[in-house]
Image 1 (cartoon, one colour):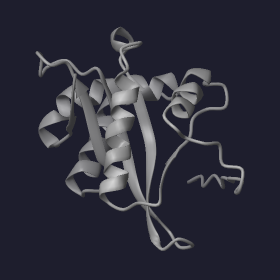
Image 2 (cartoon, rainbow, N blue to C red):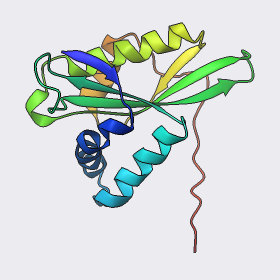
Image 3 (cartoon, helix red, strand yellow):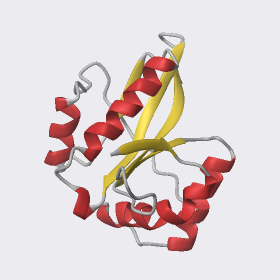
Image 4 (cartoon, rainbow, N blue to C red):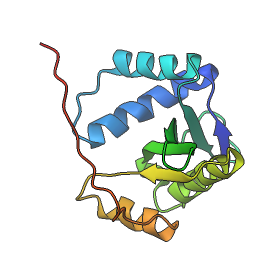
Length: 152
């Protein structure tokens, strides 16, 4: 398995799996909007997306993760948010997520980040166990809050 950084050339490969990821979390597919969203992130260098590919096939995507940059005012350092991670159904139990997270951790180290943040739905036991096996710890120092902003 190879982990590579996505470019605009990978959009056609990435977009369908991104749609499946959104559907996994109960969102409507919106394939055109999903592709456009990814395209903007890549064009504007607003995220880093890693792709997991088999060693012998450039046209099969096993999984992806998307990271967004942020910063910590308290530590005066960069933070990376592992916002999205998804593994294709036929590639599960092959350590794809582990390999993607190792690459994300390497990015964090290479950019002198103070931490890598991840979150998942509270009922996603598989993701929680995977995060914990990779060294992630539950945040006991800060409680997160969300303020939904709806456009009318």
